[in-house]
Image (cartoon, rainbow, N blue to C red; front, side, top):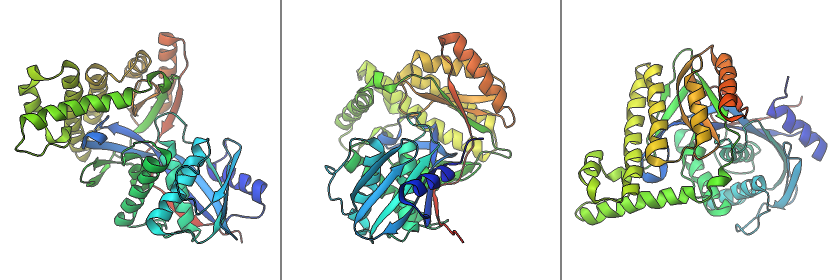
Length: 406
């Protein structure tokens, strides 16, 4: 039986620093169930935190130096807690995220109380579209709070205002320090998740609502196509530009009304202007606008306890991504087709940015193992590859706690 991330992190801490840590921060990964590429268009997203997490354990230390160990990668980093700008950053991705959180908390909340020693470990698959980076960010921030090193919100149940403020600080860390132009969804998910629930998030107003997945809740099964998004470098920014060109068309068409993002355009207006729009851009816009509608209808389905209807909307989202947004791939389509044929399948879609990586599937409780085996076989027959399959469940958001060694 594999060890828990907490056990691995604590063993790494003892080996690297000796003695015992005094505080722990934990934060989950996440899956996007509906709302593909809607976030930067000011739209709606429906997501869930999952029971794969990053754990950070550590203790304050004298002086102003941070010493951090990554148990999974067997790497270490050391830096001043008074890090002042993004240029003070190592080449390794995980180290940039740790330093970035330290920097952003210092910018927003003031200097840390002292240096620290910490070790981290996790079971959120890296590069699988499950937001391992935001999981690391939130776990590290909650460790700092739990250790009394920062004023960021801590405790097992910080209030919503505090969590939202922390999510925005963590996004700033990723945007300005790491240099990734992400929205708020990943950090929000790590902090606001709840077991057996999804949530809907308005990416503009930040209004949100928890939605029950059912009792028993379906499994959330992530299938890794074993293909890399490096083959699609630049596609994310290209899609953003294609959406923006449609927004610019409507700004010129309707100067009497503020149109900031695709969220401000109706599907009826898009259809009326169809013949005047760029043939590529209008397809991208149709995906975004129909995807927002699918989020609205998906939330209604979950409120009504209709997981089958919700699953059908997930599958419709995949078709829209494939045909209109064109961010699927032969490998992702093969995974989706294998899932459709498998027991317990309620619905599925590509995960995250798309083009490669993973699909996410909603599977009836009790049938996840049979589903996983069927997908492995079906995908192998289609591609000659055996996918990694991660059976997950909706989980609670980030927490911190003191570690009592007595």
